[in-house]
Image (tube, rainbow, N blue to C red; front, side, top):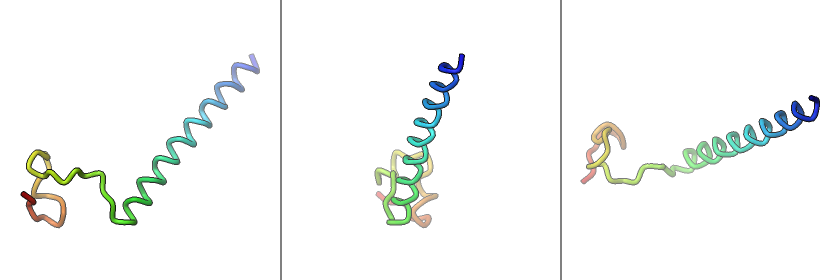
Length: 57
């Protein structure tokens, strides 16, 4: 029973580290001015509402 609990705890810790790492990369990219946006605002549901409100063609 203890080995199952220990294995579950280790898996949860590894998953938490992966999620924290992904969040850290997103925050670092945001601070550096990078974006996950592909730049094709014409096909985006939010076109005209991001990038300072300007519509990019």
